[in-house]
Image 1 (spheres, rainbow, N blue to C red):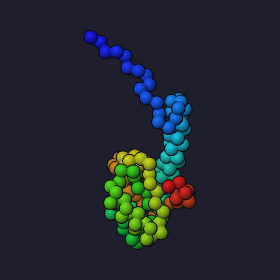
Image 2: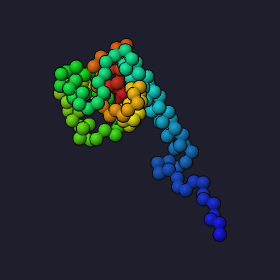
Image 3: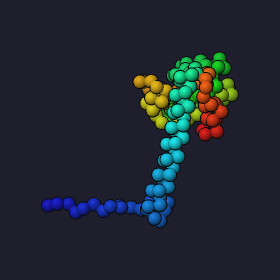
Image 4: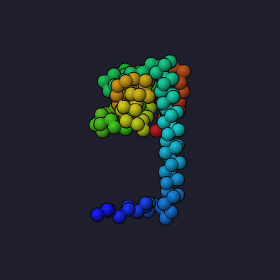
Length: 138
């Protein structure tokens, strides 16, 4: 015996009375996030081409300890203990920290690599304005 057809809208969005407007708000928010992520990715690509970076947790800590890091970028799925340790080192070194909205696979891809990268530090930005623009966005 066939099942009855499922209703199109099971429940309304909790924050809004009209279901359509909440979808629009979410789409606008996601478009803004996408645009911000694209600008970060393009700046990161320019840094990888013209500047100097260190990829990975150990080398990022080394560059922070030596005071060479100008900006640290952390992916959103970096383990909490590791994230807090890097943030602490960055705070001591007076270095900016940017929390990348994508996961470690996305961050590795944004760097033009075929491997995952949960943390990277920028030691020389090259032609990019990433250091001036990032701390305001994070």
